[in-house]
Amino acid sequence: MVRVISKALLFILFLASCKGNNPKREVKENILEDKYSYEIYSKLVKTYKYLDYVHLIPPPPQEYTIDFTEEDFLKQRDSLIALHKDSLLKIAVYPILFKIEDNEKTNLKDTVFMKLYKRLKKIREAPIDISKIGYDKNKIRLSLLDTLRNDKNWENRFKTNDIILSFSRVVFTDDFTRALLVSGVTTSKVDAFSSVIQLRRERGTWIGVNNLDKKTSAIYDLIKGDK
Image: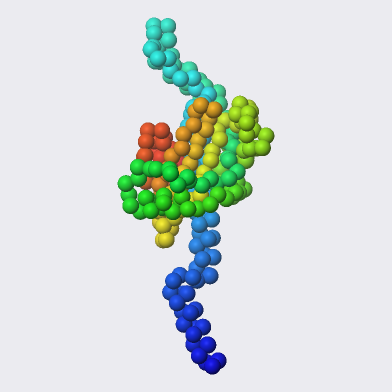
């Protein structure tokens, strides 16, 4: 009887291993997922130091005049960039890695990334650990957004922050060569956008795959390589 049970137990363990229920493998995958996720968050945080402090630069006039030409606007913009180039860009990160709503749609054409996006909808929210995010402390001041104090009063959020970033969890293909997440950028109560970011891993570096819209072109141009 004992031999029968033992054989049955071995068979069950064999089936479990065939189905991928390997504890060591799961631990390794969790470690890689955490490591690569924070590599990607770090890359995106570093990207924003190149966005020319868009919220500090006044928009160009609707029509250039004799008194204020396009050249005048460019000079004004360049002077503001020069003024703030040595200042710390104050970035606040939303403390929760948000969940994608089931009714959210996307224009993804690549089947691999589409599958990743569908998987992302099934992943729960989780806290983010900004201590794992790497960035240049000489150019960026990074903090968690104080949602309790600033939840209702949006104007308070930008008294101490220049940019507010929010991220979803990152989903990966089984071989960890491709990744997808959603990133949100807010610079004022009325100036915000989010984008689906697709990346592939090449030679140990995460690289943006392609642009989805004009708003994210600046981001993708920067994460196509180490700049």
